[in-house]
Image (cartoon, rainbow, N blue to C red; front, side):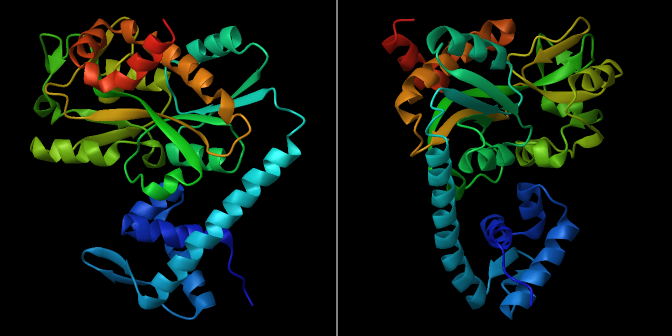
Length: 329
């Protein structure tokens, strides 16, 4: 007889949290058909349907609600066991700091800051394009610190066992070729991109896909996504041919390409700093956060248009400013 596994419980919880198999598959980083088949196997093991599927999404049945209540407790206990065991096993290696991050421009500066201010730590890095996967690496002790964007579908359970601080909020710019007809006085109106081909990261890596769809719908169009890539060189070639993409505000593209603000800042993102709440390195959190703040602040001047936005929106980086002021830097 097949047995229920922890990954099954995570799948059930993801469907309940997002309200649909489609959104849950994106959150879990697997295909929708694979998740649908997995749910059928789980329901066979448990002896009944876990969700009622209707036009407004998937809602737990009474059996589903019972399973979800038990699943939360079991997953929390397992996470606590894994973290505690890793801490116990690595007690002899307190000098290591493993930093996980989604693609961010500050990572080089962060390594420099950590070497300067916490020179006794052996710093290792792990780049992970999907923020939800990065949180899994953090929760299971594969990395000690995570730097990520707030992503579409993020729920309270993603923070289980973690201490999370907001670094800053920033606008999302558009990557576009110099001389593109949509450019007007160093800004771009989203509506002028209705007929453009779009470049986006693969769906499971795209933290703001739902927000992009929503703001484009409000502007009267659906983005025509022709290309999926996270590779900057490939994206640059496609942009030079007339396509557009979302870009970090601090981006400084090569000659012929630009990272420009969208008029009225329709899409913003929050950058987060996370550590495990009971981690042995927790006493160093403030020092590590200071290094992150310094590294991030150093990227602001890469794009003068981002610097203008930064100066005009002090509320977007109040905690970062307070940390730097307290440190006298």
